[in-house]
Length: 160
Image 1: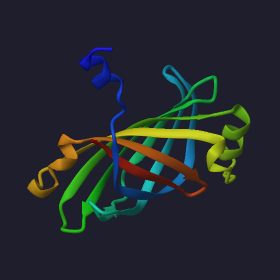
Image 2: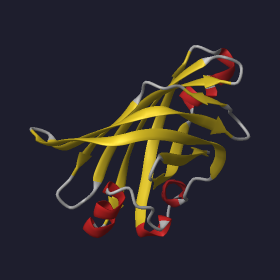
Image 3: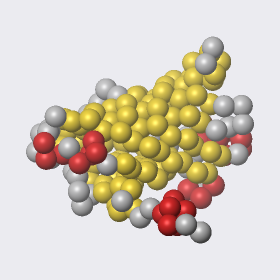
Image 4: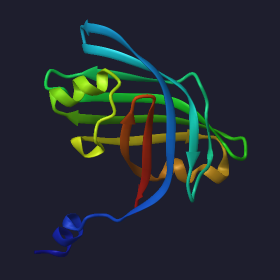
């Protein structure tokens, strides 16, 4: 194995940066559209807390979803966080929530299901004009997410 092969096959390390607890509204089910089964969930507020970042999630964002035929949900969430210092941070968080049709049905009814009964991962991108937060724009993150009846909780891990 060459040096480049070793480099490419060595998994990157992750460092926990912060988590968000996003309060969400009820599912607005648009039904089958030209793009697929469309759902929209309003973002009502929440918090961001962790060793590298703290703030408040502002109301007004939403999570736009496509539910695939196999039950996989394509997630595109867009919202704003006001940092503890008052700076605004735009978040676009794309991801997939993969579960059996039975688990998807239970979650759609507002039931709390075991977190290990589905996989929910995201790839967030951040934008801000605040110089002290530019590390958010130049880092890559992986989000590990969980859905409860009234919120989404995501731990953001920086890829080192």
